[in-house]
Length: 213
Figure 1: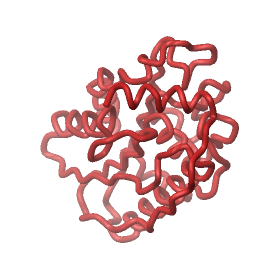
Figure 2 (figure 1 turned 135 degrees about the vertical axis):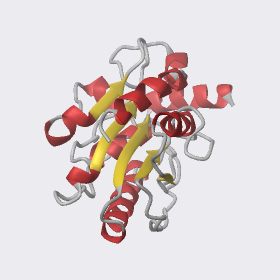
Figure 3 (figure 1 turned 30 degrees about the horizontal axis):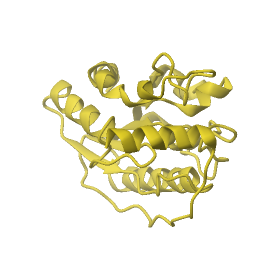
């Protein structure tokens, strides 16, 4: 698994592409107190994502005792196709809008790793076009939903390598981890293994989110 993920990260830097897979529409979850919406990295296995999504969700459950948490795995290819991140962008916004309508008191924690960070960036209105496996924005969270987004947790965010970051409305609610030498988020980075180490940041990310819900 580690070797496959390393190869995926190297392929991302090389800009390879594969066939497009169409993601189905989002489906509604229960009306929990907090819905953790996670966009996994390229080819990342696991329920919400082996490296980031799953450990972050577990850490949030430990930090947010007394809160009812649900989770949603953004439904998108998470491959190297040109429209992969755009499909994730559309699905994330669709899911959050649907949940906000069905569950007016529900709040959201958005989690994105690697290509999944591009998905989240786009959904917040920060274009990932020009970044590794990035895309133009195809959907954004509306102003009515914005107050329901408690925290944004990003890991190995590709837009950082092109000098961008989350700014504006969501900036104070965002924590964005980039490991030293990670070539996906650090311009000139050359340590591919650094991109695979973000499980170590799960507790810090959960603590950040817990202070904002």
